[in-house]
Length: 263
Image (cartoon, rainbow, N blue to C red; front, top):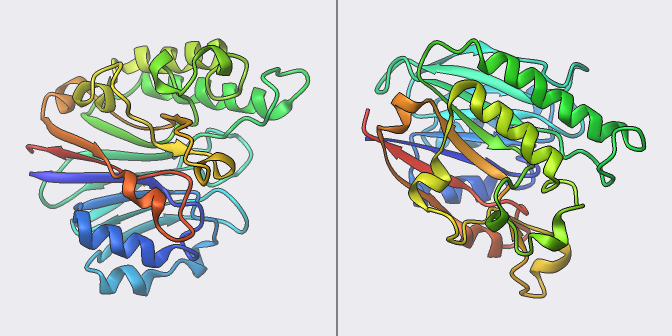
């Protein structure tokens, strides 16, 4: 059995201790991080080396964005796609070399898209849609069992948000974003592991705003995802979201997801 986790950590240097706490508690074989918010030379390698994650691939840059994949299993980097088409560090692809050999693991951080769901009024929204279009063209060419994980910044189903009607015009849940993400899903026949193992309409949220969580209002959205090629999805045995991390001191606004595979 191999376990793979994903987590938008919202600054890996600020929350390195929390990542280690999660690694010790849940013991995934591989952890994909998004929004690491640091250049590669500033990544806290020594912290994760000491925790037993000797294999690390980092695609970072100064400021925001950035992704990293940490592993107890040997791996090799195979791709860094610029789906944003502007040099932002938002993707890293690796191949596992030890147990689970040959599994391709794609770690992605899709742009949030700004506040206005209109390409003309808000260029960031257009960038998000274009990012998804480039991902879709890539997905059409996949010829190996692949797992893509990360912060997709879209809650696709009505039950993936606390109030479907209230959020229809809010970026992350607009019909246009949902349709665009569905085209990506169809391009490879991806299986949404979150909904394979926690079927709709069960509550399965991964993000809560800093502005409302402290009020204990359960206004969540399912923005983080783990999607697998059909053959790989058939080998998934369990999936969970680790909500307790959202209640830790100075937490990320996202929580980790973990899927176990019989490989």
